[in-house]
Length: 296
Figure 1 (tube, rainbow, N blue to C red):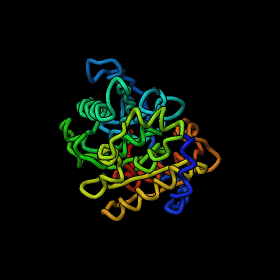
Figure 2 (cartoon, rainbow, N blue to C red):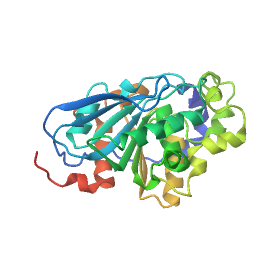
Figure 3 (cartoon, rainbow, N blue to C red):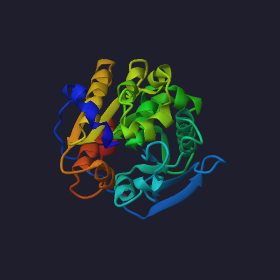
Figure 4 (tube, one colour):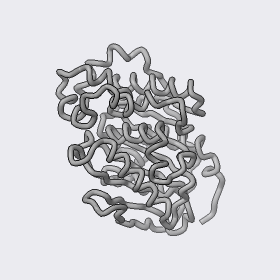
């Protein structure tokens, strides 16, 4: 995805700087993690893993969407290291979702897969389906942004759009497709983006999160980028500005230093990780009720 950095000079001025905040108070939930491997449909890759704590009750649902350029990747990217441990210890239910790949399905069908998985997850034990948070990395961040700015995907699966409370984007691949597709000589365009989005500018607009902002959007957004990825920061800055202009309660870009595109994702949940601290603080603002002391 780094091949797109050549586009950044045109967009860098739109980047929104932010200071990484300290995490809010942790509410540790004791007890073992319960891991369930489930299927939400009959097709290959229509599966997920759900992580909960035995003593947590019904927690807000964090849904992780992996990257891989719409044609690869694994939901286990969101379960590696400390991620499931961290989120469930704070009282959340945490799920990592698999979806079918391009070119076997279209980018639109991938979004329908994810929405179907979320509808399925809302019915599971330990999940409060009225409070949903999306976390996506790379192309998964693009998908999270698409779901958070265009209600048709969730509502098509009978998930009330108002139940989506917050969205976290980790180094998103693209938030405005047309400028990226203009760089036809870039290898990443031909390898990842054209198979996913084709050649129709109308379709690019329909699938560009920034073009959908303004009707109904998720109310709170955190956009975390590798500090060296000026393309993601620039498009993220434009996107955040559009969301705030449309009435979002919060939308900010936080560049994370001393990381990389993959490390930003893989180190989530680790002690003293800057990105984790920023997400914790963001979720403390988006779901303040999670900060009330609880005893387990």
